[in-house]
Length: 295
Image (cartoon, rainbow, N blue to C red; front, side):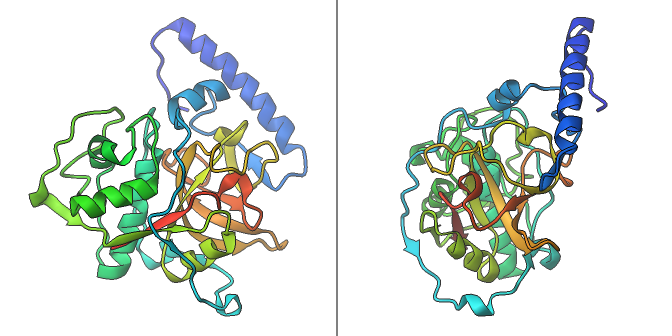
């Protein structure tokens, strides 16, 4: 994987873990599952270590909406497939590093896309500003948070800076927001009705990408391709530990519905940083805590 380690002992420890994961991958892929595992950038880690470094150490707070919305749209007129990447309104996959800041990447991803949909101008926004400055909105930097609370912070703060002006580092810091550098704003935000996955479908189809939360478990860090589905993950908002961005949806040739989801673990994970998640069954709590901004 092109990694360097501090010493020989660490190298051989990682090699053993890598070998164990490779065995698990081969065994899993020999079965007829809807997705495949592979040698991702995390293949030299045990799941427990990965969980500690890359997932939110604190379960997100209650997903209470500041305002809920039900889109009066006839499901029969919705497109069978949507992918906002094709419209040029999704920024490249980013990398949160060893920090539970996924919520901030989910939030910037949604704001970037909705800003681009409205203005036809795609910009990369600052996750670090959200981490450092939105603590009064019950976000905790590397300790976790919620995209909906990040949207509320940007609304009350009257803006967010560019990534270039407030660059990301995977650690907590003091707020240094500069109002003269505001690049995007939020007029309001909506929490989609909890567990209403069809409403998420309507929002993604009509409004744009939607921030969603998941309960990541077991082998997910080794996901490589296909439609992910796991009976071990929880479906309650009280258990979600990772926030991502639904940028579209589709159906496989075999008829399996899935979400197209942008992750924040770099392009060495999944399908160049993306994964497909089974749609229509609240897989891993994807419908438990969804929200999007209006810019």
